[in-house]
Length: 53
Image (cartoon, rainbow, N blue to C red; front, side, top):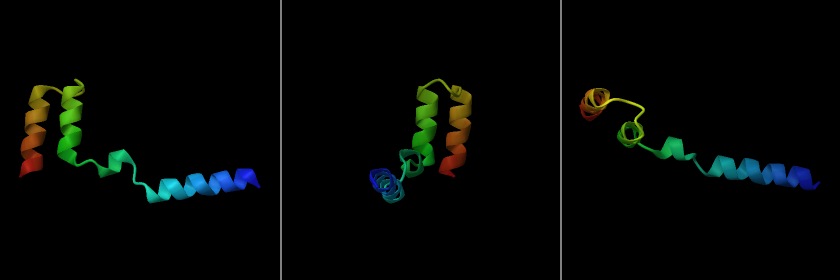
């Protein structure tokens, strides 16, 4: 019984709360990728221009 109750609670909470990744806009994600060194300054600037258009 408790296993089913816990599974239902987790499923419900995951359905109600959107994941953090889904709630972030593309420009914020781009800034984070640049800050972490995942992309170069050139890639950052080019992608930023495309997103702002």
